[in-house]
Image (cartoon, rainbow, N blue to C red; front, top):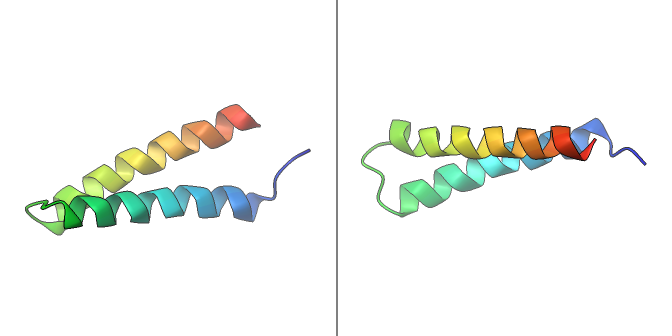
Length: 53
């Protein structure tokens, strides 16, 4: 059974914000660096969503 699109989107955005927050709290030199880790997490979550469909 397919999951709703909103759940997939929430998963990807949650991964982005969680990874950004963790990187920022771990001592990233600036927000841009922390958001780079967020982008990586978003991409991994997007791959997960695509493979699960």
